[in-house]
Amino acid sequence: MKSLKDLKPGETALVVKLHGEGAVKRRIMDMGITKGCQVFVRKVAPLGDPIEVTVRGYELSIRKADGEMIEVK
Image 1 (cartoon, rainbow, N blue to C red):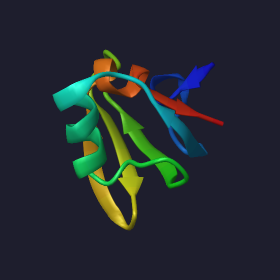
Image 2 (image 1 turned 135 degrees about the vertical axis):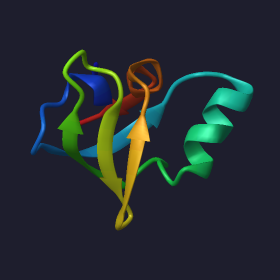
Image 3 (image 1 turned 120 degrees about the horizontal axis):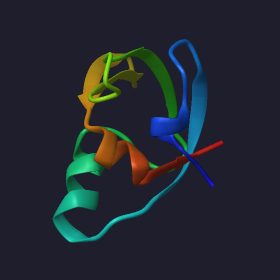
Image 4 (image 1 turned 45 degrees about the horizontal axis):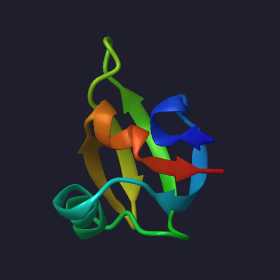
């Protein structure tokens, strides 16, 4: 399984599945990251947290822990 946190800056991936439970999964979905959407990794902070991505035409910063819950291909 490859997660969003495994991607390098400049890579694009397709969201396959969201792991996690309840409020955490709901928050990720509310940010626009849903199954089937395309995610482009713009930047990764020096220590790896947060990750800046482009989703549905807008920029978004995601914590590494949340990125682990997003399965991509």
